[in-house]
Image (cartoon, rainbow over all chains, first blue to last red; front, side, top):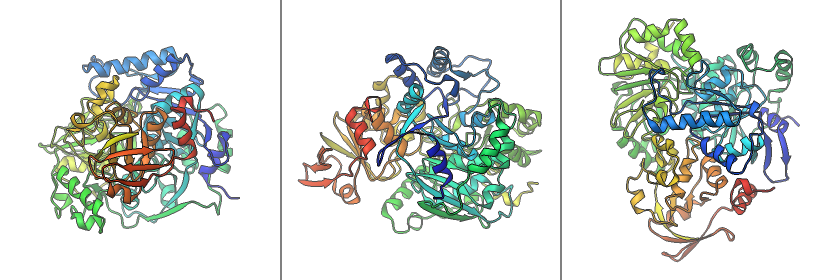
Length: 471
Length: 160
């Protein structure tokens, strides 16, 4: 019987399977960070358990680390303690840690692929919902909570119920690849399927548009699968995948032999059936801007803030949600998106903080200045991204334009470190969640692509980047 | 299991409003509980009582994988969340750590239960009794895995 890519990876990692019951699945790579791991390590100690496979476990600190000068001590004592606890735990349990001074430190979902820890056909878990990012490499990657983190540390396995399959085909040709980005594609998808549209499923993204995307763009797509409610996102690996990982630090010695196996096996068979299918045509999509307080509340940059009743299409709960969202966002229906003024710009996060994101943003910024009423920051996803960007001189372009050029971490995506919005501040952000208070209590978030964020920083309001020269 | 309802008539109550990011550094669960639901309802901490239930719409607990979310609710006294649907990671976190019961209900039940109603939940019969309104509703039974993890008292006691 023809199988989907998901089914092939799942079947290859089953340890125990019961009829109509849950499955015990083997975990190939476990990524750990400072926020969702302390209680898991406490649990191990309390029960006198060891880490089953320290060699398959990798840790870094990203969520709460400051993105200011790393030579200075961390002022927030609670953050400092959480970071020390991770250091202590990794030492005690013999886990490879990329600490705050490591040249490999960065957002866990940026460094996994960058270091070749992420591999096609593997299972990956991490105590972070955006673990779906790694699916861009044909890895089955799940976000988990702290109890499951402890379970994986102790057993290298996880109990799961088999998800359903959802194919999202992305077809057509974008008119301007630099202006209409992977971020706009995934925001369009979530806008159509809703924040729970992918519930209970693993999404496989397929189609010509997907094969045309670079690895970093594919990561942006898979990253936000969770925002569509899915358990994971997947893209079949191809030549681009193999070329991206080649030579990376932690790939296996027999990497070249594995490529043959991967190319032959890691794709959905012709005729494989999915539980659900959705097709997005990208020919006509515009740069996207979120106007509300969840990522499905998205519209075209050329459009206006919707009227709640028009957005809800007769669904009363949706209408109420839209009214509340507009109150929180302090927006009036009918306002042109390009008339919305912004106070802050954040280019960063596991969605959009990689080298290509920064290169694309720099093309807009070069030789120009950030609007005097805007504070704009660039937070590279990792120390390696930062170094590569500096080698290309991007830091100079951004600094000359009055962007802040910062150290790597999750930063203003979730407001755990000092990088937060003040109440009432409005931000154009390349991150993944526009939830109330996400970037700081009372802060207002509009999710956009890196080029859209860069253009908004210069103008002080949203701009249709298709009108700019991006080549 | 008996308790009173705190109803939030909205979908997509995300983990960032259940426990905002800045509090994820807090290790003490009782301290964490003081900030539960702070992003949505500033009065939650003062009104919640031991044994209460939360009632909400679709996709409850969407967003981050932070186990701090069910922990903050559980340490506030919440014994169960009744919702039209749940986001997966929140759902598993609630059950794996034996923090609280995530109970799926239908549209009708959601509309019939009001804020402050007293309920009695029987997970063996999959029944919810509304003591205030003298009504009985069905809850969606737990799946095999979830039922067994709950019966075991959390993931680490679960034996297949």
